[in-house]
Image: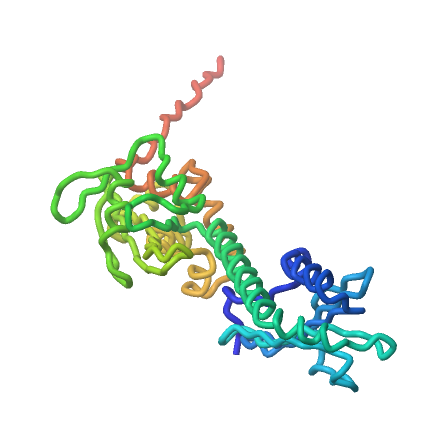
Length: 328
């Protein structure tokens, strides 16, 4: 079963600083010779081990099933778990020459519940932070506008595509079904406050393009019901209109199929799958279309097609060279 892109094992690499601080506190209280932590990351079924000696720290790495210590008297262990994510134990070790004393074991038993809670909180924080980083990276790389909207209507996050759409030089206005023209930002804020999860809403932009918004919802760290809006801006032209306008500008039939897929909001991989070609071929077709239409981006392609059709340039008359008369 594949691991969700939102889940990732904690306490690894440079993100293990919280665990290092927790272990530093344990050392100051109980003074072990070494500290080991081993946990099972349940989504992937992998085990990881983290070790810290007196002067060296070894970051978490994949290991085989846990080793069993020969003498329970030489180790003190605290178990921790996050339901559905991980289950593990932190072990404090001492050599046989310096066994744990009764007061130290009692001190550990008092400290054990707090230590388990600290480990669980640190693991949850790292997993959520990693999920946030992955989501932001994926959203920034997407060509589709994506926004997070609080119930108050304020924008919590907007990726590059959404920022470009909202900060267009010419302000965009929306014409919803009720016919009342409103700004794009106000329309987005209203959706964030009122639209239900799973809902898809359509509207028209004042420049003639179609706008579709897909809505999802989740609760953030502050327990607010945040709306996730995915926007698609599509041409209002029919396929026949697009085909006619492209033909007058020297665009081939195959290139026109790629353009129609772009106007539907499909990405390069989706276009390649539909047309049974590679992504490189899709990019080549778009490069040729951009050159023929004099644009440099997909948004420029939409504007070029939604604008008034250009008539084909009339050929310049070619003057025939003057005839020479031979003198007899």
